[in-house]
Length: 341
Ligand SMILES: *Cc1c(COP(=O)(O)O)cnc(C)c1O
Image (cartoon, rainbow, N blue to C red; front, side):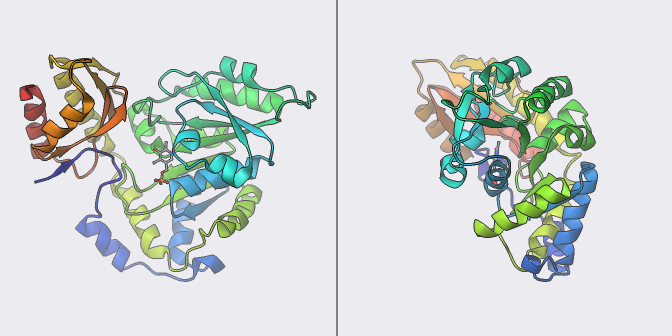
């Protein structure tokens, strides 16, 4: 039995999800004639109380289209220094949109309204790039699954409105935040201009992300998605997995969070662990004492068929998910507590 805790993207579709995919009614989505994609887009737009949504092959593409929608070449966006849009999208912000990133030194990937306000370049000071967009990540990936209070996001929104900036949410793991903080999608729909959500992480669909916004913005998004090669034909088979995931796999994220917390408690007791970051959702980040390298920990766990990832600088990451079951959890907790060097 292999236990893969490298990411929540490693899940495979369940039998039931596959059945729903098999049964999907499909059409050509490039002509907007796939009924299942249309159904998914409408369902997600409704859920967030926004006008329209668009299905994407990946979260990266959804974010990249959002950046393009809100900026012109030469502009600057503001995000945390650990943001996925800056660190893990292949340099796409500059490649696709010709924009630079003003990086803020946030707390576990989370930034504040005060930090944003200070980072905005005065629009009439033509020597500096024009600030046009703020990107938020919730939950934060590199920040260890931390999630924002609505009040903080509302305060940043005020700054964006005052300075006429776009406001985009990279909500790849927003579902986890909604469950952990008992928030409602409409609270986010009211604040942001665009929101991207992943169906292929905690929710367990094999492929797919969705970008949400108003009608006019999503109509423009359609063209940019086409330019990037993201127009898919009978994508309803994938959208069906997303619909299944929305109906069945949101509430259960609580279990992933509970298990991540328990793993954190076990690690806290381990002599070789330096620090465990606060666990709010399904991402657990911890560091090893300097005399034990992260590579050794990864190798020792690998020998027990447990796979986790290194983040550099002695930091390690564990992500719990749908395919991480209770028997595995018991085995991992025992293996971690017994790990010796
Ligand atoms: C996973 C992830 C994405 C998108 O990833 P894809 O693999 O392109 O779907 C975007 N933002 C964050 C924070 C993520 O964790």
